[in-house]
Image 1 (cartoon, one colour):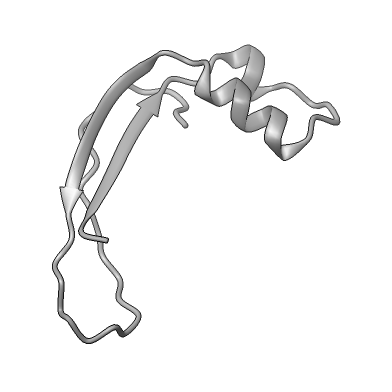
Image 2: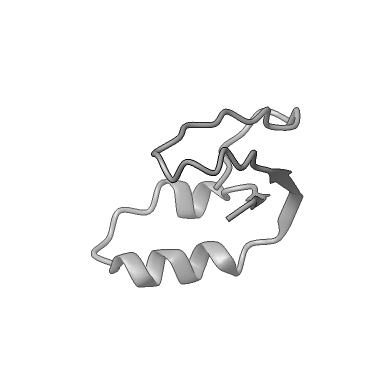
Amino acid sequence: MNKVYFRMAKLPETLNQRDDDRTEEEIIKAYLKLTVVQSWEETLTDDGDYQTSNAEFKIPAMAPGSYV
């Protein structure tokens, strides 16, 4: 794997404060229906050593709010 793809959607208050018994799959489906406000991709370095690695990415500046 040498690329990571990101997309962010603003979380409406109605979904953010919802307290119900939805399954994880139902929650993910609801998130995927949200309008994407930012998307980008990052390239990972390939050390070729097959060891566990960590990476940090800068997230673009966004307006205040809750995002998924």
